[in-house]
Length: 392
Image (tube, rainbow, N blue to C red):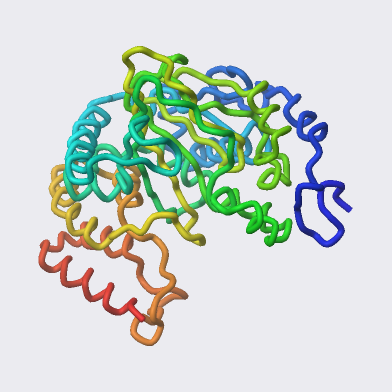
């Protein structure tokens, strides 16, 4: 029997052993396990995207890179950095301008407020920044999400047809650090609810979601980049343990932080113990676009109106594809961030599989429309008809 599981197959506080936890943390990441990384800092592999363009563009080389990233996230330190994920920072800057405009409008309308991570005034959020960017500036959305490196790490952990969601977080100088935690799914349940799920579900939860962040500003250590605890995702009872004072103390004693530059991205297993750091700077407004990407087989946290996003994006995608400005994997990346890539759930009476095991997906329809050079009206009619068929 696994010594960390109770005899009835559930994790509870009694399942948690700090000495076993620290033994996992005592590991060191071997450079031989991350041969495509540029370097290792504090047990976190740094991948220099400018040197990986050939690996990202070939089918076999991309698969080898994805296998390496998946192993890092699952079996090794649990976190990796994509240095220069945006070699051209213009899409990041343009998105930042849109997000700042949205934040100002929402603050004026609501008079401020807080979220479940910080007190009022410490930070500002744009919930569902994915959809809001798409509807506000579809051209910016396309340039921002037509990013092969981001698409590759998402597919490495979740497979194809993942569900992109995002929330912008702006932390003002003086914004306090978070408590150490794990993330969605079980990380967003109470301790009592977590204890109701059997141990194998605790093992399953992390592979349903990928956590990431794109730096929209330079993030020196004093600005409070995310505090990370490499290898902590390996501790199976961690959804029970992270709330316990002893484990919180271990986190505060052993966490690491890495500075990021604008355009860098960090991705980590949602079971990794982590927390946003304190912004102790005098004048740095730390902004990140927090990406939470879900498996096609799971439930995303946010409700996304992907129908409206597809309609807003189609004219831009059509213009760029016709002009040869957006093709291949970059086009796939942009469409994957927008459209629903999974056939289910659907109404099989009205939307039966035709010529296969599953009905056409929204993503497949959008790509087919572009390939067939459908007019906007023809695509709109096809999309609305598809959505109507899928309804209960």
